[in-house]
Length: 401
Image 1: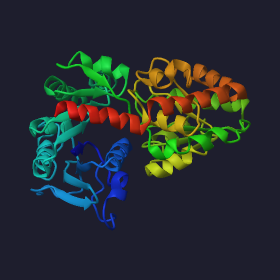
Image 2: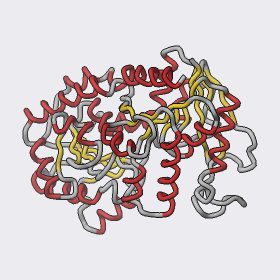
Image 3: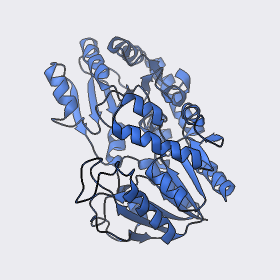
């Protein structure tokens, strides 16, 4: 089968499938390494795969997508405007015309490539382009547009909400990455929404056995937080306050912060320093995904304070690496990922006191720590195996064909 995958795909995530030196290629779009996992497993299963993505470094005058080749794989890059509303080299902002330029670039790439089926990720510009191409397509929802708008009530998110409504009204086959998200988007869809979770990178599943056997010393715990920004929905402030309280009981504890806004001198460090609570906090910021996974492998626990997420990959990856997770008991799909508290610790992430108590509870009880760790490993093996998930996607491709 010739399968097209469209979404925010980075060159880094698919570089092993491309011929020659990739350093001079467009970078594509960061933020979704899971699409690289999907592409890799499909190629390993013998499918011919093409990726269609965008890049803001390309010239606005680009009339044809740039295409690069590999063994059984191609990637197409179209132009992506930098600004949402402000002019971009004489063009209007991308939200002013609802990503028209970007949608046309993806649609053109699909029509040039002529796949049997297109799998579009996220219910926005990529899905609109896939539907407009006329090629049979599957749309996977990764977030709740109405919840994102609720946490970030601005014109940009309002525009995205209406884009998603159009996608859900017109898509013929729709999947969602958790039961929570299935319930969120089903009200707008014209067809049943099928649950297919996000896949764990196979390389992590291969590490499960060694993760389960590692020696755990909780006297000086290293706690990780992986966030994609400092905002209300990600809710980092109570977590930083909770860690400061934790240090009063476990002074050797460290908190390692990863992601945009969490690097040296960025928003998180500025906020913590202004409140004089930065002791023990290490601000790593953004880093390549493989490096992030390597760093996580050296941690003892993942703290995830987000108020709403559908199927956060940082939880799945941490569980696969043998890290117990502390997450929100009302945080969208988080309770489901953590098997409603059997494969992780659920707490009130709005409360620094509650977060601190949950951290002390698991870090102070080695038997509980090991029980949650093993339950998390088993949860990944049973629910988030890439092979099982790709098999489900293959069934959806056959159904739309």
